[in-house]
Image 1 (tube, one colour):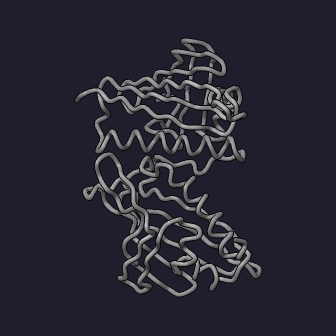
Image 2: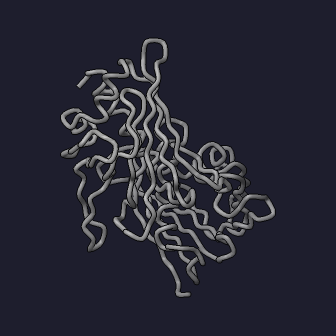
Length: 293
């Protein structure tokens, strides 16, 4: 196999020293990144992370990561035996120009040989999107968006909120295009029946590929209780199996408990940054359903 180099850039909602601490303090790593973590803050020191939330590293004996650079508030690099494939991660931090309290993170994950998995390039990209989503959520609110269980044979994203509105109002916000456009920011189209077409009106490009993102078909529909749609690959790859998105509504103390289950993922790494994205849409949906916008 040929080498694989994945590069990415993101803006984080905290100054560099705060981000560096989240990346290097073992207690903080255990809060947002790994079930277990040990850090020896020096070049050549251990940078171990393992457990359910770490890719291909379920036990401490599998955790052989070591630091290759350690420059406080500026740079962190470590060797990561990635499921048997040697790799090195480099994370460079700098203040964002003109934006006090924000950090630009430039990342590089280099493999001498690409991991021997299906869609290796996409998997590494999605894994870092998931890591970035959890770091962003932690820096913002003190908790990760969703820690994956890489040992789960049927991984799924499950999120829940309580909305101060009746189920009928919440359900309508899931299927009424005029309301949907206010929290999905597209041009929704809906044929509200089982087998009917549904579109959030999202259109974008991934490389040279034109993609219509979001759902295409209603799979189940129980008025004011349940909505299930398909969810094709966000990159628009027809060879990737579609996932499913389920919305469940239940009464709770005069309000509505809304639960989202995004499931049938082939592997937990495929969660990508969906958890953080869904949390953002949850807040928009709540605002619309509670008629605050």
